[in-house]
Length: 572
Ligand code: GLN
Image (cartoon, rainbow, N blue to C red):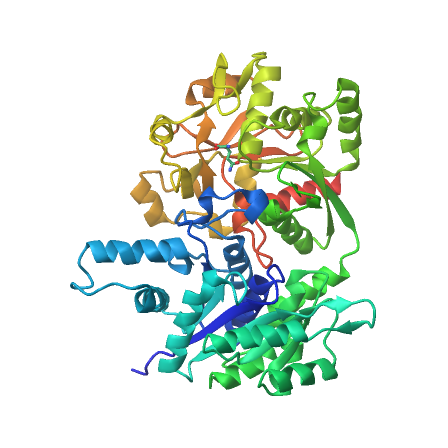
């Protein structure tokens, strides 16, 4: 049997962070996949947190959740969206997780009495983890993005892993530097010097980039490419232009036009096997030709950081809306609405009423996930408005829980109903924490202890959810999985990703149903509400999910619930 190919591509950043290393890595992955290679992807985050679950989204962006429950960086979401794959904890590491496994091995005597040191044991552990994942996934190419920027103390050990691998397998390892070229208005010239310094920093770590992707507001001209090539020991053909684009999904096409994939394949001595890029090309054409708009309001709270407004905390929701719009030939116009604008704690009731009236301009409203009590009354007001004015509504996790609170208050007449996350003393705890979760909080075990990852839900026939999920096989359990769970073969069962501690209180389910709420998805135990909806004769589209469908939407295969939400929003 022929030996399996095993190649490594490392993507590192120069000059500054946040210039799209993740998108660059994902785009390279897409091009290699479309050339017929099996690719697996890694994100390495250089911080001590063992995973991203304990980090504040305003500071770090959205916490992405993988099917196995791993809480990780949002770049893993880009990988899944661009590569159409479900990754796992095997594809993610942080400094903390690598140290933790080295320390655990040491405690288990796995180093056989040796002195365990930062170098080489930490870089070797990184390499081993990459190799293990290559083996278990039978992938041929490992695409590894190292977070942060070269020159930071934090990522030196990861660069050391690259150096060791390159030393051992010089023909199988490719180092790609994604660097930023600033533009000074004075002479309108993209500046190459910071990139030259970034390469010098890499050189001092014993590394030389094989290719450089020059990120900038504009395309790099020949002069810039020559300058970078000359000063950074490269051929001009190894320097690529990666200008800003209207949509991240255009990046693979731009890379293809620049010949990035061709040079990478050459350098790794690989021959393109097939050309499957047509599907992606079609997507990019659809994106650029969409004219008709659909306006969606997203009501959240993690928007501002100092004087800046960040949308990163909701990145998957935004992408899922866009994917659905692409498929329907629409252009999504997304507006950020701050929940406190609808909350009487922060504004007079007249102002709140005025702000609510302005919601009428949106064709659809989303209340995404969240934590804590701030501005929740504002979200509840928005949900009530969407319900009464029949504006298509999608509630995601916290958004679903607050929709249940709103329903209980106004349709069951239990005015003081609430989630115990917001008011632990509420007489009507319609959203409550599970007993096992209570235990974890008492013991201060916060990391990795929520209800995480993919969980099954049985879908009720005759509902919007039922019709919608029938369109997409990807979410459905097969016969074997159903048998294992003990559900009947004829039932429609889905699996979706979760991240929460609270649930609809099972004691209220009967009363909610009697008052007209449809529980269209429920856990196989029949206790936990997974999807709620209003009957279509009462509202054109009012759905809440305890899980996060936004995490599993792909540009080439949008999530069915988002697709239906956008379809109804655009057609009213
Ligand atoms: N705060 C809620 C809970 O923990 C919802 C979490 C979320 O929206 N991801 O259950």
